Length: 402
Figure 1 (cartoon, one colour):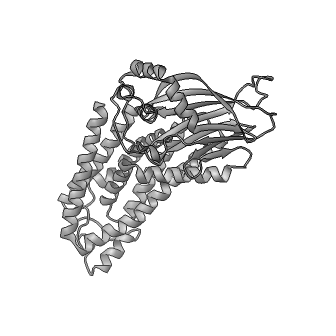
Figure 2 (cartoon, rainbow, N blue to C red):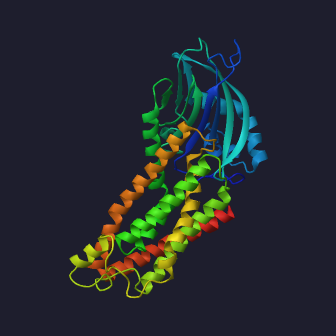
């Protein structure tokens, strides 16, 4: 997850990724009937501390704590902030630059992080039938404060509604390009990146894999998690469900700790199939084959216990919470629309693709380790679960404290 300050917390120097959120719409023309001209309104949300650092302001600006103090700093340094943003976020109309004007400054909270919310009007010359381009180079790698910044845009321009992800490699959105396929691809990649680089979700998935004894366990557990997080992800991103990040983030961390502790208990009593006998006996190829097929003799030396009976319901509940976390990372909270739904589905499919990739690589390796080197597997997996549990418990404390 991104490491950034909450509202009221001192800013920290960090080398992390960050997202900029933009809502761009047609604005009433200053020279014609309302809604008839090419003028554009844009609301940009940028992490407060990164914005103040990137504008090269003094420490008291980015270390300000509390909403009132941060708003005061934004007011005091409005010219510097405006200059930084308008140098890196631009709108053109039929190839001609539109003139930006900052009309409002506010402070909002996104996932427990303070964001400066800047409202702009871009005055554009030309007839209404033209084409707009929106470009973003906010928080570039060269500034060294962050890397791999993405600007997530929702737009309604030139009788076209859509979403886009602007990156260093693809920094410009142009209306009239029939962007649906590109939009699907952008959000697919964004979803995959979020799971792959979201260490808390990866640790949760690894903990689930360590506790799985055969392919059937993996498939059913992954399906329960997928269905659950897909439901709440879509509902939260569409604005139907709203749960504060101050609740979601500690619960996500607690879910990781719970699964890791259960894994430790199973490993201690031999319930995670750590040797050939536990997997059914016979030559090594037999246990491996049994573990990788849908059903078979792969089971612990004990009959199924409480975790076997409760695994799917527990994972399903935890998946519901993780789904809200995925939606918060995407930063979209809006009413239902077909265009938005395509973006959300693409993002979710990207998550699932990376999840399946991790399962396809890690689970067979775990099976081989358990069969070929059961003593090493016991110590390695036990140590891994202990580390996962410790990290997750630290996150619980950190997220509750701050």
